[in-house]
Image (cartoon, rainbow, N blue to C red; front, side, top):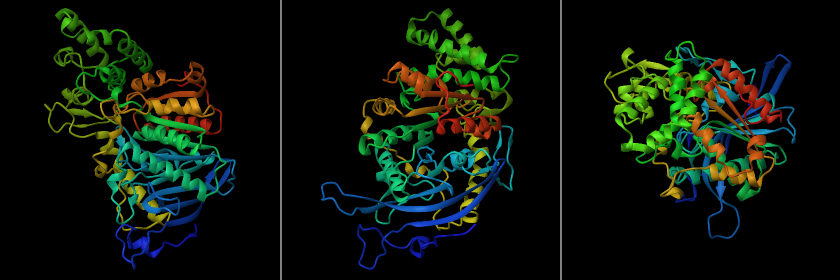
Length: 505
């Protein structure tokens, strides 16, 4: 591979200051990009592509001032993969993870990029030395790919003299990523390409908000949005006083995780999930609404039903007032074996530090998967992509908190209304929604509920939304059969071969 753009010295050393408070001799922030040439051997022949890694300086026009050259305010890190045969008609997929505070290493090296990490799976996480493999299922076969890190994740930072916390909130983050998309399309002369967004977890919240902003602010209609492990309304998953929705929506996930650990021996996962969903939608709401009006015998009967579904002692369910919180469930399910269960992926387990703890101490699924991603992204960016900086690559950063939801005072944080408005305004935008059955971070039933309530015509729900399920968790691509299936579904999505809602496996 060849480096076509040398690394600017000022960017490499982190020198220079932003316009705010900058002296006459201070260097202005500048792009720090390196482009390398690569080839991926595929069964149908080689795929030649360029990879451009680095930070670009974004500018803004201050409010209330005359139009003119903007002031630099952010340096966002991304990697752009462009097939050498690309044209203006080839799709472009912009991808990001969530958190808030997660870099996009997970989608980048786990699913989408031309190289992928060998992470292992539940029961067999990868051991050092960690390595990368060619990804023969990369989305680059069908679309050019841009993976971008949100502020304070990866190598993305404010320009010197600016503070990062102005970007740490739903609205500001939305605007920043939308500006990056506009900037990339302009720099690369790709305005007429079909544009797709892909987000995972909070990245789906971001994707819905960014897609709506692109349409509302710039009249850029995306061709499609891939929502991987989505959360579109936080009221469906936030366990707060007086809100019973999460208890209903998590129960089918609990049942699926119980099935993964042998609590429904001899039964098919789909049968267990169907039973749990029927209970969550029909009987469970009335039981919770009854409250103190529920007779003791009725409460005991309900606890027995719930306990059988989710694989725990009915007495424990009854003491919880029939309301099973997810962190408590993950600590309780395998307590007798001295194990805690993963939140990101309920198939993972680890020894419990405290056998009597009411909540799990840490998430074994993240703990067992993250080291392989951390090692390989740092080696990959510096080695294969030849990008170097003295900034730490933030895989998962707590520095983004507190995360601002100031526009949602006294109401649930949600982007379902943004998504519905986009679908009403843009008749050609389609959705691919991907759920992991064993995902205890963003439960599939909550997403199903929100999608079914979108303020769109029924025929749009039927014809423009494709929903798929996988026998894994939040990062379903760590499970090889699920990775292959999701890669195929994404390929069909960006090439226009998608089936519609209800056709998922």
